[in-house]
Length: 110
Length: 111
Image 1 (cartoon, each protein chain N blue to C red):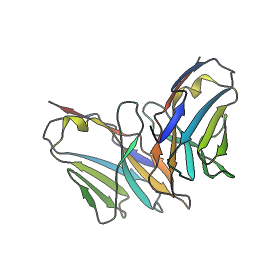
Image 2 (cartoon, helix red, strand yellow):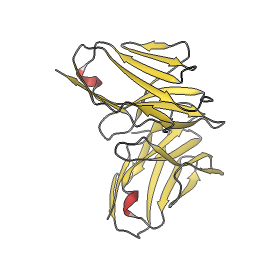
Image 3 (cartoon, rainbow over the protein chains, first blue to last red):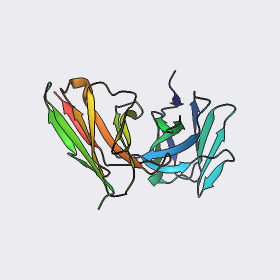
Image 4 (cartoon, helix red, strand yellow):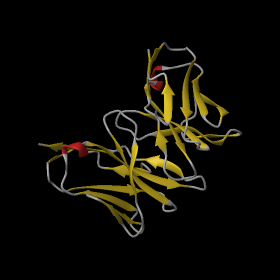
């Protein structure tokens, strides 16, 4: 079983749609959680951290359920520029090593 | 100028050759990392370094070695390249255990 699992997609949605991505992680002792965004074969960039209480950044909302070891990302009012691969990332261990999911590909269509 | 730079950006080499990928950062971060990315897979950690005297193996270190020449420089070497080392390689930095900042990547093709 992969340590961090994501639905690879692709998700093809029209502009303005709401789309949700899910992620599960296997290490119950994980301490930090993130969503990164990666444009086609470019470097990953931090989209947002994920906190236990849930957090929002504009059109983006992230949720964490520690009991179910589940992380989600909700994108509202999708824009063409949201097209990218979204990486679920979990930090574990004393060094908080990051483990990356393989990513979920999103294409927002005009 | 970019905070994290990688050279070369693209490299084609032959099986058995030794090559070095270099990473430099101007962010002043203590921690540096090397990852590889293969299609359909997540980034896999090769090596990481928390300071100049601290080098640690990641999950896929076999066939690779690293050198932390200074706080700002972290090099990855393939001693004898093989075709399954064909991948996209990323360097990253962080200050502490949280957000990592990635370089633009090096595309490596081993023939």
